[in-house]
Image 1: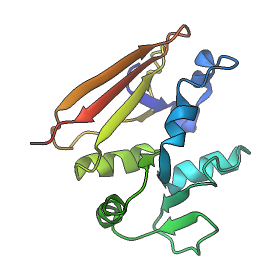
Image 2 (image 1 turned 180 degrees about the vertical axis):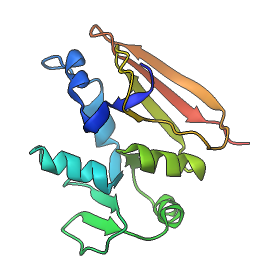
Image 3 (image 1 turned 45 degrees about the horizontal axis):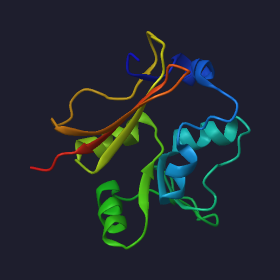
Image 4 (image 1 turned 90 degrees about the vertical axis):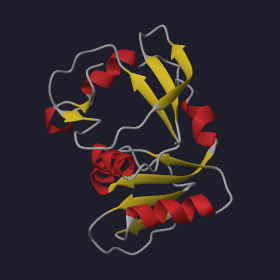
Length: 165
């Protein structure tokens, strides 16, 4: 609720307070609308390093990294210009592009005004310290509220469209 997406040391244990059997908070429907995923190398390493396996193997996935690494099936380790990548992807026909984190990539995309929409899930906890989703020093961007969903667990999901000037 206070803007942190992870506790210190990338601890995500607080997410367990909203885990409910059979409840995916609309994720299944959302991910079916996506054919391309962008995420940072640290987020990718965290997921794979915690034994979850990469969840988006069926989608073209761009892992943003500073290192050069060969493509692995649908995994593209990208070390080029992020702005150019997004413009190139948006120029192609297809489904939605999903930024799956982390905070550094989110803030680079915000800085360059590359998001069309934001869907933010608020977990009912004040974490107090850790990794903030939104960093300082980014341009102001007006948002238009598309929808609000409230769940029995206390999770609230806000869907915004970025207003274009």
